Image (tube, rainbow, N blue to C red):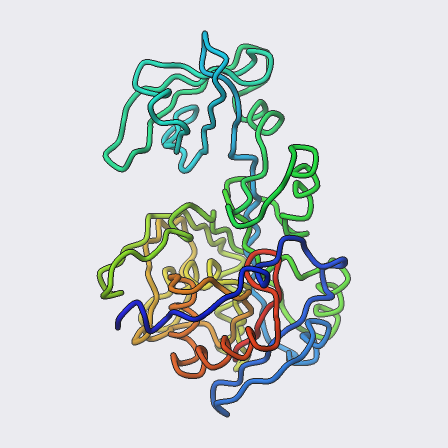
Length: 348
């Protein structure tokens, strides 16, 4: 398929800059695959669409403050290092700005000279391999957590670090637990502890997996033929307990509902040809686009994604390209809010 088949007009003002006043107050479009229709609703109605013995699968990854702002060592020039992927304990693959200031052999300092970053290697894609060294009794990870900033997507604008600090909590799901993501699994941002508790009380099972959302999830598709696109590897972990809950749900006729596209990719990567989820640690590069045959999920809650994105292609694979693009055009006309802090859609 051609990339332009996933394009649509998205007015800038529909990209949400702030979350809903309360997590569960967002709008929700319901997309029914078999009936080939969609209609407007509210997320508060989500529990009523679930049945006893259905299973929600949540991604419990936790966003860490992966954006570090400091100075080039020995200079006053401001620099930024964005952590993309851990290579080993204190070595990271990173994006740097400005690239000309952070060449191999140069150093950057953060805080009050508390954390040093040494540029060890230049990679072909413009990234760097960076070694971090603590100058205090704190570990490198502790310093990153204290000195770093929440890595909001570039289309969300913040005027100051103080304003950005408000996102430390709101750009995190209420069930976030496993540190390691550079972006939130945003479909989960709609849930509150009360919503989850109410779902369990009505007999809905909850299973948690971990998929550390990486830079690859949001890489733009830069090829005309979408089948030529590839996604950078990301780490996923599925426990025996969660695999058992999901497999028992399928065996008993219940539905497996993935909360988010990252959860979907993790589950589909870990499912065998019999439709059974296999516990373990995975490195997934799975790119899902129309023609993909889903093996385990029966429903998907997800936010609205940007034009020509791999995430939109995944949703189109699940519910059908024509239906999804019609739903998206309606969402624009109805002024739904898009992307990370935006509204959601439930497809089943």
